[in-house]
Amino acid sequence: MNTKMNIVRCAVAVASLLAAANVLAATSIEVTSVTQRWPWNNKVDITYTVGGGQDVSNGTYKKIVFTTVIDGATYTIDGTTDVGASANTGTHTITWALPDGVKCATCTMSAAIYAADAPSGDDYMVIDLTKTSDNVTYEGLLATQDASNERYTNAIYKTDKLVLRKVPRWAGRAALPNAASLAALDGYPTGDDTNYSTSNSRKDWATDRAYYIGVFSVTASQYAKVMNATATSSTKPRVNVSWDDLRLSTTASTSSIPVVVESNSGTFLQRLNYITGNKFGFDLPTEVMFEIAERAGATTTYYWGNSMVKSNVVSSDNGGELKPVGSRPANAWGLYDAAGNVAEWCLDASVSGNLTARVDAFTPIWASDVEGRRLRGGGGWATASGQENFRASYRGSLRTYKKDDYNGFRISWIAD
Image (tube, rainbow, N blue to C red; front, side, top):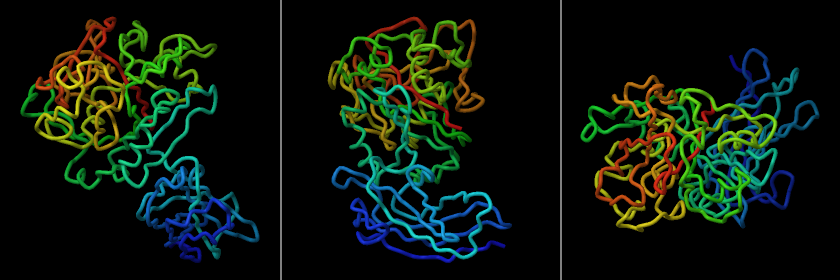
């Protein structure tokens, strides 16, 4: 049996909690239930409903702050940091850990929405390349995917910051903007029975881990900042970089990248891990991770449908040269250039066999006698849009030491 706190239902107004100048009145919040778990422990489940969702308001975003008073002491739960709860429209439940020994048989819970520097939540991971410490933060999805897309197409996220999109474990797919359409599937889809029945046939991946993957291909500007190279303002993908340049020629696909602990040196991925405190293990995605993210739930030939739409890609007959990242429409999860502009390095060796034979989405295939590595998002700027390379299930390959103007990369991190 649960012991419940008294419930206070409230709507945000300028005169609500603390009467602070940065309280926003446009969005409402209602606390609908507060329950301390039984037997007495320090876990409290707070269910609340938000009307309006996170949006841009005078250049700021919104966060949720819960407040309660227990035995004369005031406790504040900041939805941006301690809770990490999204302020998106709808009903949500978060769990608050009370201090040891504190019980809340009778207390009230109130809530307010405040201006914040970033939207609350963890749908996005942001790495600030201008900082040498405390440079990784998390941000939530705004009221719509389009609103978040607008935020992250700002030039700063193509030069000074790297931004990654979260792909939640399959059980957490409700956090995605197209969750309703995913309900008919048994997992995140990859493959194409019509075109690739023997090499990349249809499969649904009920992933048990969340991961983050770059919203954009890494740009020339971002690459230069990480490598301490000559500064550039170019927001075009960084090309002429080999798989070996990124991970070391002696590192197997299934091995972690050797950690650099004494200085900012080594490959791009070694340096990126170093400047973020060697806490994350940033790497290239497996090709399954890449295709899940590219498709964003689509089971069609291309991630936008079954027919080529030339305006969706950078190709030889639509642009004819390398373009800045984000110059074409995003997919359903806000990823850009998932097909076209450049093909992108993945972890897997370019061995034969059906992609569906993989152990899981996060374990790359490896063979010590195979020099090639997989390229995904194929169909770069020099490829005509009518060719098969732009299909979501297309698999290319290249020797690990090769580098050219057609291939780039984006980073990923397996979160749990």
